[in-house]
Image 1: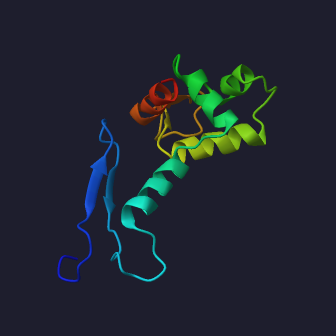
Image 2: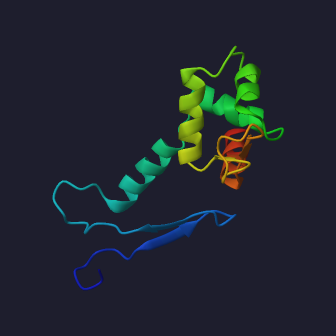
Length: 127
């Protein structure tokens, strides 16, 4: 990357070291490509923009792990609606929540809890 004039790679992880991310930025003079920092900032902003249901799920989990049915009830839903399911999937993919028993996702004792990233997101959103 250095030889062709590309910016150096960036390495990052969260406080709990639950993931490892390597960014390989494109050459700044590649036609049609935004500046590296601008593109990175836009992607980060988009990843952490949560809808109302997702935000409320995080707030419900702030008090401790909950089963999916209990999350739905806390949000005022009578059952696990499509909105709840989509919110849980997205929050898991963003690394903001996790299963309490990851090796048995269908366990009747399964719950979801905040990750360190989820706790950080909540703390920043309340500032």
